[in-house]
Image: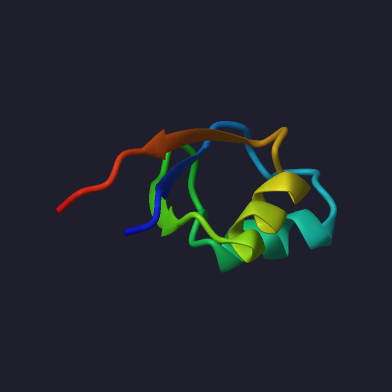
Length: 64
């Protein structure tokens, strides 16, 4: 099984460029302090790297 990432929106997207907003909406982060969980894939890592200044990332362990 692959690793999971817990991603939480910690800063507001107000006043941010539309590209950043689209990335956050694509991940399902529409409100502050909302957390989503994804598989750790290169595409998700790329999305996170675009908005790393707005989110908090935790690596969750494997759950069986």
